[in-house]
Image 1 (tube, rainbow, N blue to C red):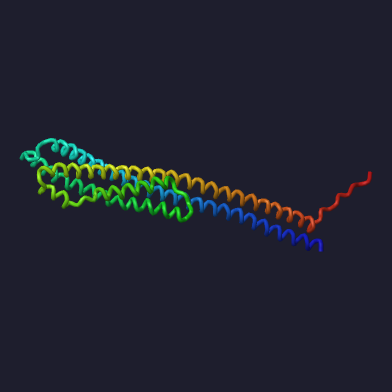
Image 2 (image 1 turned 120 degrees about the vertical axis):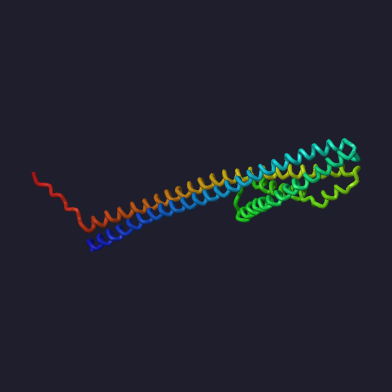
Length: 261
């Protein structure tokens, strides 16, 4: 009976030890795989944000050229507004300015429409994370930039017919209406530039947040793996003690005989 108990304890302890070792190995394998997936997901997200920021930077360059043209047009129309619009050379200068203004405003309006996709993406991203109960970096900035881009697109949505009608407008009114039109386009481009800058700042904050979130998740993954290992090591120690007890029951240690002196 004593030997049977010892054999049973050794078998159970050995099996338990193998289970504990397997659990420790499986825990670390899972932790490494999960951490690698989180890191790769964060890297892909950062890469996507970097590409979006690069595209917005290119848009900023194009917008800067449009704003420069609008500023020149505003300065010119304000200068012309101080002269007599009935004079032939003034009227000719106004017509040339209108012809040059049409493609500039069209480019600004097209750029604003394309940026509306960016605004919708920012707003949707913030809404999705809010619905999931998460927190996003600078959610107010993302929504504000999206609203600014939408407002700028509305301001720059100037019908071409309105600009064309200026050519047939009376000379007394044409400069006044042209000043209003150019100022409206310049104000819209300024709002668009602000919304674009805020969007890039929101993307920069998102990239920083993604990196911090990835590091934090990986830290907790490995911390849980360490805790799991400690628990199973404690269980492994118990199994080794069971094996030792079983061996003593199975193979009794012979008593030492002390010779008589």
